[in-house]
Length: 394
Image (cartoon, rainbow, N blue to C red; front, top):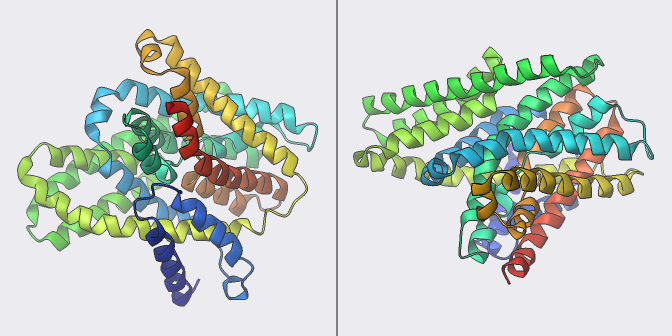
């Protein structure tokens, strides 16, 4: 991808973002993906590809850090148990339910192993609230649902990549599912990622005091975002969880001292420019990349899997919230339906899919199916979230 192409894509992103600056009425990422699909037919963009390395090494650390750093920690403190439960146990339950459903349904259309179905479910389970959070907040007087959607996504990104890594290893090596090996790997990678992120974020929050220059403080935040991710991947734990935890830890440490408000001013000024720029490039690239995989014969199965992804997410969320009396009174069935619909597949799903494509490029039908479901989720759920919110609110 040349510098001229990057500049042109950024300019297109600027135009789309400028059309609805508050993102109140339509989700900008959906428009960017559709524009990207159109650009795939322009010869100038024929040589553009989005690789696993580009997604994991450039886009993900910055986007994860920004979301974690800017997340309202007051909400997390008050609702930490439900957020942790939904982002870990809830996602695990969703993957098991969705994987089992995909395995049963796909038998009528194609041949797919149970591990392959679980792998696909792990790709489709993480959510990306960037498309809909601002719409939810503008449509609802109570921001509780938007906060749940946003906070859950931070944790389920890390959980999903842990699950993906385990199922991917089984899929490539063609081994059967083992609950013992799965739990051992899951706990090590998850707990290790969180521990590393807490340590890294705390150390960087102390190191920032050694420089009074705002430019250098911003440079240090870049080290936190990318360093925690790369270090986590290097030592074999979850780089995603490490980055998310480091961003939250840094924000929490700054929040303890009112004198450190100027740190936030510097960091906000920088990351508020970086985030939309990366998002514009990313969703345009997703559209361009997806075009190659969307011409296939199993669109009926893709639609069925998309519907199953909504049903299983609703079952997992409703089941968990209805079991505990305190949560049962807090979340109605309408809330469960809206939170389910707002759980859109996006950045993390595409990143995991690119990881699968890089190592298993011969399994085109699995890649095409997953890309199609991600695209259906981005378009259908994003466009429908505003009218659904108004409808359920009434």
